[in-house]
Length: 201
Image 1 (cartoon, rainbow, N blue to C red):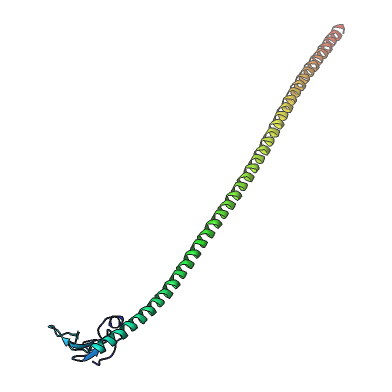
Image 2 (image 1 turned 180 degrees about the vertical axis):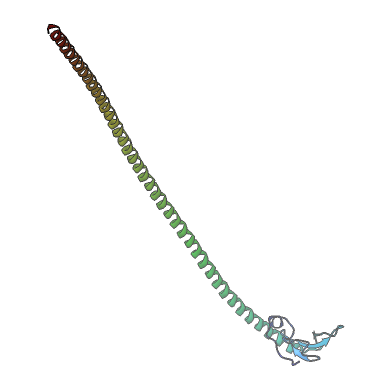
């Protein structure tokens, strides 16, 4: 394995060198804090970075100052990036919330308006249907009254016609009786006259 610098966060942010110790066996490298480190194996044979005992004070101070400056710059950059991200996120969230609220309000208003309109329309329709039913009931009542009047008139006419037929039948019966009596009288007179004539002869 080649001993190459890693740009992963865990290697950049730690005080030790930004190199994997397992790839840099028994090598000396400068740490992020400016101190010298050496990769040595532990009991399990895994290599780790350890600080070297003998180090120059001047170089360590300079490196520590540089590392502090670098870390400050990095932290400032990170804070700027995080501020930008947070501002973007907050603006997105606020825009989403405002859009959601406005959409909810508009949907509520539209639903209320539609419900009111539909209720008004249904009320108007029910009123119209009630008026129509009243008119139809009145018309049917009038028609039934007219038909009842007509039936009464027809019943009266039938009664009158029955009376007239009875009267006519009685008259005809009387006339027939009278005619029969007259004919009987005439026959009796003729028979009497014949008998008289015979007796004379």
